[in-house]
Image (cartoon, helix red, strand yellow):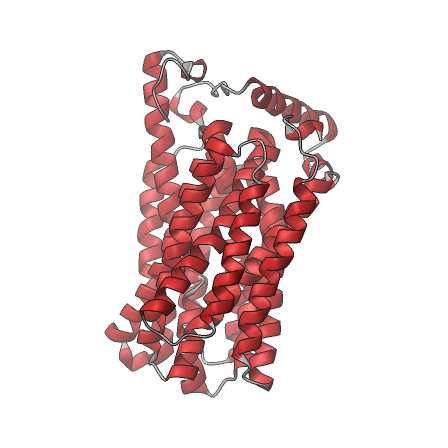
Length: 442
C-alpha cells in the first residue's frame, strides 16, 4: 500500500496507526502466501510421483487418474463450506488446522501400500487442503482495501504457482535423498517443508486489525465501504447462511463459476499430465520429467501476480476483458505445444500457457473479494473454488480414461485448448452490459 496523502486518507487511521496497520497487512500477505506456497507440496506431489508409482506398483493411468480425482472432489466439496465456516469460527484457526492435518495425511500415505487406503487418505487430504484458500481470501480482505485486492490476491496466488514449483523440487529431493523407499519419498519429504511454513505462519499473523489493537480500516472506495456495511447488515439480519443465497442469485457470479471450472480443467489438465507425457512419450525419467516441466507452474506464478495487478489499475470495474485475452492466448499456446518435443521451445510454450491460464484464476479471486467484500469474501472464494475443483476432478477422470484406453495425447491437449475457447464465450456473456456500478446493484 502506498503512503500517499493525495490518494490515501490513511484508511481512517492516524498516520502512526496507518504505518502499524500497513506493516501488519504486508506481514499477513507474505505469511499467508508462503504457507499456501508450501501447501502445494502436499497436493501436487502426486502428479510428479505418479510415473514412479505406476512403474513400481503396476498401477495404470486410470488407477492414478481416479486417485488424483478423489482429492479434487473432497477439496471442492470442502471449499463449499470451509470458506463460510472459517468466517464464522475464525479464519486463522482453519488455515493452521488445515495445513497440519494435510501434512499428517501425506505422512500416512508414505507408509501405505494399499491403493484403497491411499485413496482414503488422499481424500481426507483434499478436505484438509480446502480449509485454507477461502479463509485466506477472507483474511486478505480484512487487511487490503478494494483498490489493492487484485494485487493482494494475485500476490498470494502467485505463491501458489511457486508452490507448484516447490512440489516438483521437493519430490525430486525426496527421490534423491531417500531412493530406497521409492515413490513414498514423494509424500514424506514434502511434509517437513509444510510444517516449517506452518510454524512461521503461527508466529507472524493476526486475523484482523482488531487483533493488534486497531479498529477496522475504512475503505477509500466509498461505494465499496458502503457495500461492506450493507452485506454485513444483511448477514446479521438474515442469518449466517444468507451469503449463499445472495451469491447464487447473481447470474454474473454463476457465469464466473463456469469460468473458474474451465480454467481448472485447463490448469490441472496440464499440471497433472504433462510430467507423465514427458516420461511416456519422450522417455525421460521421473526427476527430469518433474524438473523439465517446472516452467509451467513458474509461468503460472508470474501470470497470476501480474494480470490481477493490471486489472486493479485498468479494469477494476470489469475484469472480464482480461479473462478473454488470457483464455485466447492460453488456448492457442496449448494447441501448438502438442507439436513440439521437450526443449527450449516447449519450455517457452509451457511458461506462456501457465502464465495466461493461471492469470484467469487470479482474476477470479479478485472478483471474489469484490463481490463478497469484508462481509463474506471467504464464502465467495470457497464457492468459486468448489466449482474450480469440480472441473479439476472431471479432467482427472476424463483424461485418465482417455490415456488408459488409447494413449491419445493429442486429444488431451486439443481438449484443453477447446476449454479455453469455451471460457471466452462464457466470459463475453458475463461481461455484457456491465456498467460502472457496484456489484451489489447488478
